[in-house]
Image (tube, rainbow, N blue to C red; front, side):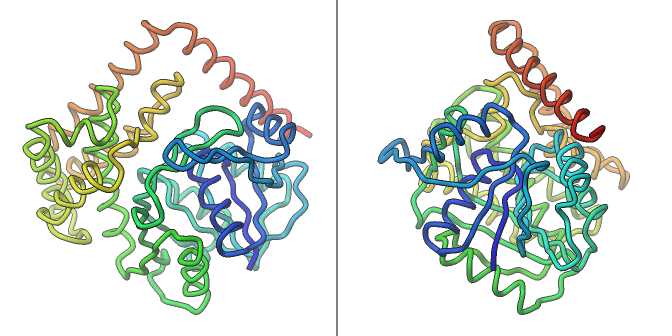
Length: 343
């Protein structure tokens, strides 16, 4: 099968490059971030390193939605939640989506599958969760964190039917060293990763620390247990059974932080330090809404949402040049999107 990646940031580049290099699949890359596209074209590929070492140039083909004329079998989507609507609209307007294609996404948070559902039928959408790290140094320069044995991911069809196509995608992901596992509970899979991110992504972002630095704190287990317990209680009120128990989720979080990916900064931190809005409303905010919608409360997660937004505000105050650059990039993206849709 052939693949195309929508959103060529850290995770999109990692999935695409590993499929290209290890599974030997044809992969195209599509992005709307102009500095990224132009830098990759200028240098003839993307610079890739592993845990800060062995930086080398990997040739890739990258396009804007409007100049892409390929016809992949599988779309892989890694776009920031706030940007997904515009990205999908541009791709659809450019005529990229075809009836035979399927789509896979392992984005953080929840809300993107309904957006994908506006362009693909439920039986052609595959969700995933990834304990896989990447850090974007800048346009065309990505660092993968954690070696091939540290990566892990789950995947499930949105309609929860197992098919030969899903197995074929899984086999390609396995060859790409992504260590995939097919599971049977779509919502339970997604919510388990949201709970994971509600601890590590959020707390490490607020305090601008790596996973391993969180793990080294004496209160790491105490904080993890309480945030996880609140999320599981919200899920139980909603009638959702997560993959694993409270205890196994806590151990997964702590193992990832202290053993598998101690050097990793979460993507939410990367957004913060680049002046972009974080996805906390789609992570801790989702847990809080889930609790409220079913007659409960999730005060820890409500508090953390406000704390991260406060951190965004504080970072912009202390780093006005970063905030200004981010605002210019966001404005340019909005103009590019408007122009593309008007053409």
